[in-house]
Image 1 (cartoon, helix red, strand yellow):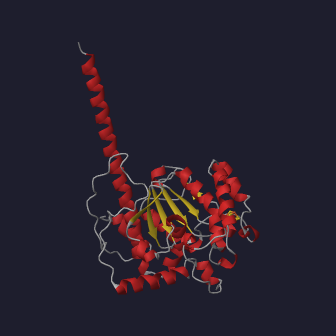
Image 2: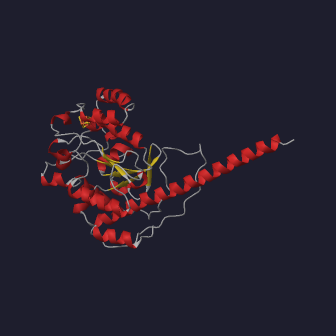
Image 3: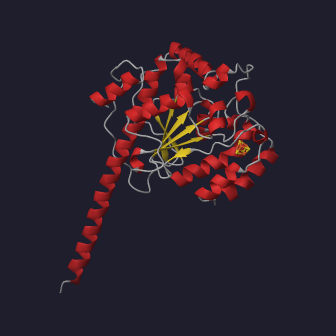
Length: 328
Ligand code: SF4
């Protein structure tokens, strides 16, 4: 994606040296005809990656290990005890009763509208995290935003303010979004807005890692938020957001740089801004991820426009044929 001088200025503002993307996007392949799409399929059309070398895998592993211990600057300040590495939620055994209770609760949650959903989250006591929270962190942004950002769990400042991605990490996220002409306002043009939500709505005590049963119980709220927003692109930021949405234990370094899908919605994996604050070289990779998301949005817009034209032509042809049949 060629950058305008405005984007370059924004990158400089974010503390990034202006650089050219290492990858170029291949031309968009023909869009499958309606009814032939496989909603859950992982798209392989962007961008072509060079073969992964062993040293790349080692580097990715090191980066993800850093990210796991570094994804929230609040956690670093509070020097939490070393937590065991948590595999993907789906890869860990969860008590059957928890799964059953969460499934039952989900049925009710999936029928809620925005006000009822907000109320349900605010009063939720479905897991032990309710005991230590100051307040729930529902989410922020435009309720019909074209972009949705999914983070991990609230940190101390989020717990204090009731809003996700605040503090230095939030400022960095906002700067990155501004570079793409986006912001988290609740009003305005939905195409230029984001809705931001976390995987967990309550802060884990001491900012420890989320536990599988907590993620399981909280998941229906995030699912319902995605259903209501109906975003055109999802950015999953951080390991636990990726685990919740993609059900994989693959490290972020191996998942970023390509398009995934969540319930048919294109999804891009990237690093959490709090991690980026301490790993400056990866800011460039995060910017690549945002550019990938923007490219996917642009492609979808073109494909939708093409579909509209085809549908319109088909309607015209049908009308014309009917008209001809009416002629004597
Ligand atoms: S983390 Fe989620 S499931 Fe647990 S109490 Fe908070 S809102 Fe409820």
